[in-house]
Length: 436
Image 1 (cartoon, rainbow, N blue to C red):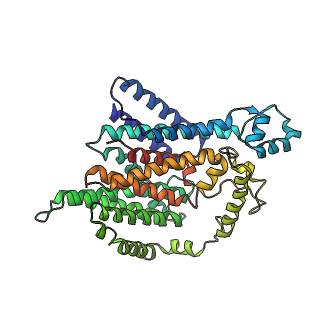
Image 2: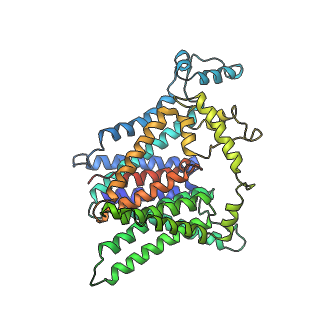
């Protein structure tokens, strides 16, 4: 049964990735339906067998609180209660009263239909987290099995992207099956740390002063080559923050690998050298096109740095108007029109900062549980990565690098608003939180 579930989850994830990252509802919602059916099949099949130990009490409450905080946004409430909880929401409804009328009941979300869609997505991510966590617990003796689908999908996307980058008459950049190259880089940067961590695990597990077996060396070389392939594809995506995030996460893996089990006096000794190596990579690895992208921070095809900062300031005003429950997940574009001074002649559909947009749409009631869960999961991965050098600790090391990369990238982009990237992040979080 675990092998069947892993196969099903892999097919779901692969389909979402190769269908433009799941950005079209016609592709994405069948994936969520298949995920729900897979979870139901697994539950029916193993309900009489011991399940994995439940997450800690705090994490359980947080995982339940995230979809609950979204569901509250679509529950019709009396207008007098909404006026107390979110005065700006009532003001918005009153402004639309000549067209929409004055209903006696109102949702906290300004776009309840969009919020319901994102609620289903959030539930899908929680289900993916729990299923992968269950599989990782059942395969403690083969901890890399649940990681393999991520690497396979990333390698296929990387190869396709490199073909696009070098194809005659093409755009000269890699975007794989994604609409946006930055979101393509987001997928690759979450997967690249795993082959690197796996290669380090093979080398260190088989290291000997008197012999060096050929087979582990070949396996390690293959894994390092895979990590290099993913990094090259990220470079050819011309995603500036994708490149920076990938370099930072790979340097972090080197630092944690060295410090594991070391005496405190020696633990941080190589940090300057590894950071210098990352800086050298930042200078030497980019192609001419990526260097030009760094030099053209105000490129016409995307938001300039100044415009992006202005969007963030405008979003801050939206946050101030909807501090507790937000304007509703998926309602950012419609509500932002009132606060948009950065590009008043254009619609601003994303804040280009996942954290800022989350607090704008979900308020602190949604933002705090999610961030607390992220802190717990990342801390768990960090502790596991610092244990004795066993295979599971290198899986945790890959999880740490993966989550660090996407969390860093999300500060200037909306990669986690792409369904398949959110699903991969949930997959990685499930690996990181697997019980021993």
